[in-house]
Amino acid sequence: MVRHRAQRRHVRQRRRHVRRLDHLPEEEAEAVSTLHPTVEQAQALLELERYDQAGALLGRRLAEDPGDIRAWVSIGYCHLNTERVEQAKEAAAEALKLDPEDYGALRLSAQAMVRDNGWLHVQPVLRELIRVAPQDPFAYAMLADAVWRAALVQYAKESGARQLSTQDVDRLSGEAAELAMEALRLGPENVYVHEIAHRIASMAGNGTVANQLDEAILRIDPTHAEALARQTKRAAEAPGVGAGQAADLYADALAADPGSPVMRQQLDHATYRLLRGTRWLAVICVVAAGAMVNLFPSAEEPAPELPIPVGQRLWVLVVMAAIWAFGAVRRYRRLRAGVQLNARSLIRRGRWARVVVAQAAWAMLCALLIAEIPWTERSVPQLIFWAGLAPTAATIWFDRKKTG
Image (cartoon, rainbow, N blue to C red; front, top):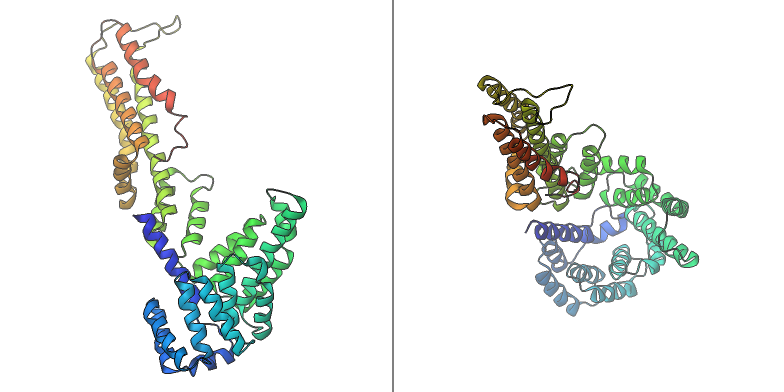
């Protein structure tokens, strides 16, 4: 369900991006300001994502006046937002017949082409868009993306390479990077421009620039899902960051973007690392119990007489309680409430999380049996020692990469 909500949100964001009319050149802004009332009403419906109603209004308007270029562009966005790409391209073509240099028609045509996987053929339209609106950051960013993709495809065809290295991508990204920099200069507050620049920089292996672009994206839009996920993952995987700190970072990111499946998965992974830590505490308790009884005596360390005195057995119990109090309980209480809830949820949802908790409980049971029963011989506690230690040791490395 969370994944479906995230997908729906992504589609809504993409649709809002498709129909945005901000950053228009002056002549286009003037045209929008003189819209026919029917077209103006249809565009209001577009903003509300009521595409069928907007399309019906625009259809009637075009029946009255087939020469209304703004109506053609608007109905084209109705088609584009409802995945009717061919109809969107036809609407753009009709608008361009009326005015080959109309900004809105050119932009609609470019967006419809790339939605139809036409990245390799869209450059002429985008270059015309830049000629018509030389101060438009969107056109530069989209052209940078198109140039970059075309360069990679052409190199792959000519070289026969199935996979390009970061050095190859960096070498092929020269013109695209320059276009992206121009787009950033023209639109320093435009998220789409930063997204394209980030994609080019990250694929070219320029991590420093990509990180700076992520920070800029989050400054403009603190809830940007992809940038938030990348920045949080980078901080959580930094050297010296423990599982508890990582879980807190992912919980903070989820607070900003509750529907992010990536952040949810990473929070589960960090929580699972916390649960795996409890198994080490149980192993330490088993070893401590075995050391008290001295299950494997040697000439240097002779075995104490059995049974072990009550006071010594109780002291080992105090040591075990201290290990859990400082190693798990205190740490758990210092976690955010969201991480605590996720830990309980993960135990219910995750098979490996339940395995880890069960192994820790089993090892602790074996430790208590060894330490608290007044054994008169060592063969049985030796068997319990290996029964508590062996299953945990057998899986403690195997399940390291499991997410819970």
